[in-house]
Structures are given as structure tokens and as C-alpha cells.
Length: 502
Image 1 (tube, rainbow, N blue to C red):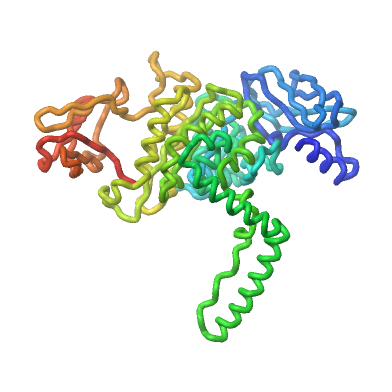
Image 2: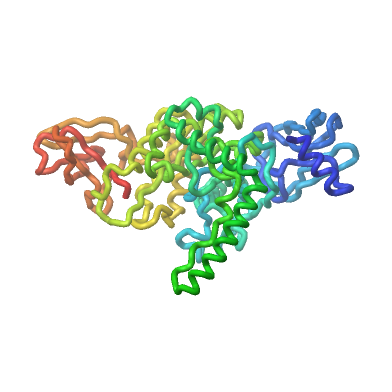
């Protein structure tokens, strides 16, 4: 691919320099500190090449396919704007205003994509944003059948008004807290895409191992095959033109008859299915192009679309596969991975509404994945939801909680005046037993310190006996323990908390 890209760049615009940095590298970007930094791009096959930043530089030779890659020695965090450069054959390309700090990839679906503009308090937050050392790059939405070496160039922006309005809300609050505490620049690479499922972010060869993925491959391959047989781009253009003409005629007839007008054909329905979300599509189009980047870690906020219909069925395998596959692509088996658990939503306020909703399955998979995967963190969000929207407007607590995990587990930040890590987890279940008709729940050491019932309300607790019928339960905090019971269940065998879509 580098060869075809190079030919396009060199011959489409006469006189254009024949040495290029990948689109990941831009003015005002942030490079990773304290690790060897990979720099890559395209050039003239066989040409000698050197790239550098400040006093750091390295040399290599452009490969036969026109691609090149090299490593700079670890860089020290710096708020001083520097110039990243690459030279080859008398040509030079530069990226100015570069800072050195920590770089985080922010992935997932719409709750990660949700910009600061759409969050609660955006009206005061955007205009008061003053973090020019926090920068973000939002990748274009690209899905492909084959792994892509690059993506259409985008600008790195700074977290100041008005640029910050388009920054991921969760990422903004996360980065702002990290930067304040660590005193380093922070770069965010936003690869989120609303409405996507876990399987869209995993390479297809890994997904083929999951039996429940078979229907998804069949559906995509059928639609893609039909699009090709229908003439590809040309055939789709003809069908769209014909359908638009038919629609225009139908609209005129409806107006004359005083009837409701039909909807206009949607051009997206005629596009190549391979450019829409499909198994492996975004792993190829959005992760592979940045996989050479040197980063600190990942935040991943996804799961809502896997709670619709039967989409939860492959999630037990596809969600942990995201972590495994991204770590493989980035070449970091220990890459820190923050799992943001999905919030709840409903059009009703009752906690009993749809207790068997698949959001519960999704949250359970996310919890289990955290417990089974090293160097991961679970950021709980179910209390941040609104009752009527799948997109909670309160992104600040989500970003702040993610930052607490990163500070404690990734950076080893300790509690003030203590030799223990900064607290970031809520109560984590450890065991339960039955005493005098009550379920006594105990938690892992230290996670239930200061345990209280929110506003002294015991909403969300359920208890069941041998009949497996869950009843509303009462609860009381007893030190670091929780007592749960119901007068309707004399011999309890199971207890639940928050097991609802809301």
C-alpha cells in the first residue's frame, strides 16, 4: 500500500516532497515520554532517511514498498514546543509545536465519541477550558476489508476554547486530571465510532474462532457480495439515480393526491458495505494505521450496541478479544487498558423494569474481563445515567474515575501521606453467607472502606429463595459488611444489586 500511496503523492502533485510522515504525526501533537518513540511514513524506495526531535535522531533506509520506520531514544516530558523532522534526498518535512508527555488512545462507541459540546455544563466548561498542553486527534471513521497503513490527515487540536468543543468529553476530563496531577502534557487519540460493536474492533482472523460470530460474517459477506455483483460503485450510482428519479415521481404524485410524501433514498444505503461497520472493519481502518504509535495506554467505552437483540451472544469472547488484539497490534502485551463499564438507560424509572435486559450480561462480561485480564481497570458508570438516554450527559465523573485508575495503577500514585495506592475502586464483592434469614455480603479488603447507602436509600437490592423469584429487598450497612433481606423471602439463596438496565 505504501507504494501506491507514494505514487499518488509524488505524481498527483508535481514537485511535492518525496519524504512523508504518517498522518498520525501533525503540528501540535504530543509524543510519548520515557519510551523509545516509533516514527514512520513513506519515501523513495531505497533512499537513506533520517528523522529527529531536538537532540534525538535516528537513520534508516526506505524499504522497497516505499515505507519506513525508525525509533528515537526515549524522550523526556516537556512543555516546550519542538519540531519533529524527517529528511531524505535533500527533501525535508516538519511538524511544529510538538510536546512530549503521555499519549492515550480513546476507543469505543458513542459515549466515548460524545464531544464536550454535548456534555452537561458544556456551556461553562468550553469557555473556561485552558489546557493548551492537552491535545487531541480525532481519526476519521474508516472501515476496510484490509489493514490500512494510513488514514486521511486530520489536525491535532488543543484543549482551549473553542477547539476543545470537539474533544471526546470522557477523554477531556480524564486528560485534564492526569495532566494536573502528573504535570506532563497529555495527548488523546480518539478512535471512537458511535453504534459499533466489539467485533468491529477485532481483526477478522481472531473473530473466526468465535462460533457465535458466524451469522455476522454471513450477513456481511452476503451484502458485500451482492454489492459487487451489482456493479460496485458504478452499479450503486445507477441504482441510486434510478431510485431518486422514482422517488421524485412518487413525491409529485403524493403531493397531487394530498398524501404523505415518501422518504428520499438514503445515499449511505448504496455505499460499499465494506466501508461501514463490519467484523474487523475498524481494526483494519482505524487501529492498524496507528498501531506503530508509542502510547501509555487505552480507554475503551463500548458495549451498548452489544446489548441489543442477540448481539450479546458473542460478547463474552469479542470484548476480551478487543484487549488481546489491540495489545498484539501495538506490540505491548502489558498495554494498560481501562474498561469503562456501560451506564444504564430506560424510559421508565422503576428498577424492576426489564431486570433481564442484556445490559446486565454486558456489564457482567466487562467485570469478568477486568478480573481475568492483567493491567486492566474497570471504571463503573451505572450511577451516572439519566433515565431516558443511552448517552449520560455527565461525562466528568467517568473521566475522573478513569483518571484515578490510571494514576494509581499505571503511574503508581499513592494516597497523600500514605504508602498505599490512590483509591480508585468501589466495593468489590468477595463472599456472602446466610445468617438468621439475612444475606451477609462481604467485600474485598479496603474496597468497602467508608461504605454507605446513597442518601440512606436501599434501592436496587433484590433477594430470592429456592423459587428463583427475586423480590425487592432491604439493606443495611454494618461496618464494611452489607446485610440484605426481605420479609417475603424467609430462606434466601441469592442476592442482586443493580441488576437492571437502569
